[in-house]
Image: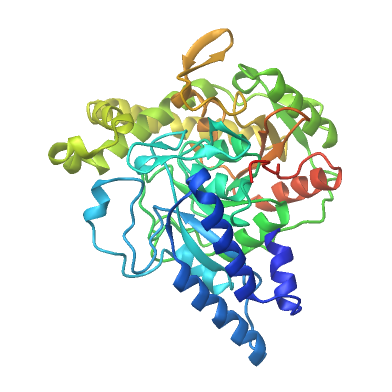
Length: 457
């Protein structure tokens, strides 16, 4: 069931938060052995929180727009009383968090019920959620395929119907890539729009957080509950809150399709999905985001440099305890010359200026989210323009240049009969999240997109 529908039923006393939470916990207990989404289930705390929501309703007290909605978070969000794993073995030695991450606290304040923490690539360094310590989270649509990453547990939990709402993080595509491969909505708002306080960061100058859900309305509800200035996060912005617009009215919106880098490498399935979305939004013109391939390279340098410096002491003392899939990349990142990092940051400013000039002529840009549907779990290469390239770095082919400059992006799901789902990115200028919500609502009303239901339950 969708998050907004659950909240409405609870508010109207058609069901209770207790009953909804019990059902979610039973579903997790029955099916998570197959999907391996959860690294921790917080049954007792969830049932207590649900009882508190029901008591508030009985007393006539306000409960919030997400009252009784079960949610779960990538295991790099602090949850008071639990150890924040960030997908690692090393973090098991850390003390429990003393307070919730701001995002967790804000969803709880909106009435949502936290039921657990979710699997991910170690320290958010990956696009696959094949974790050496906590296992593989397979794709709910085909258990032989990856769910994507690094927020794979978050996307798969929604796709499998275990919970209607989850949180993830996105450095170079770690929300949008698994959303695309699992056939759900994944939203990366403007850099700084949502607080990262209490989140284990990977690359501070690139990291975002955001929600996964099965409808545009659920994404908008979560965004509205999460947004707002937070003094605990030094990059948190003081932009005024904006109620998400779900009218679906797109008359007057200037919508274009990204060409150049974003037109390369996609499979026919992805190309067809892009064509369908573009037609529904009456997007016929194209625009070029110049030097996007170079932006992707610069994003890689910044990510590898900042990530390796963050973990440098652990690399020096606990190297053997890292996931082998991330260890060597962190070590390589530690060897990147500082001059490369500085040049990448200078290029970043130039690229941002170029893209903002493009947004003077358009309001929304369309681009694929991933070059292909979900690869097989044991697959190591993929075809990109006729060349066999490694899967792990290239699943972010279309997402990295957009994270690089902090643009708000929603990956919307498209699925053809008999094929795996893929995602299309709706891209807007900074702080224009409402433009994205309008377009997503229009696509839903046209019957073009909806979260793709997995058949493996």
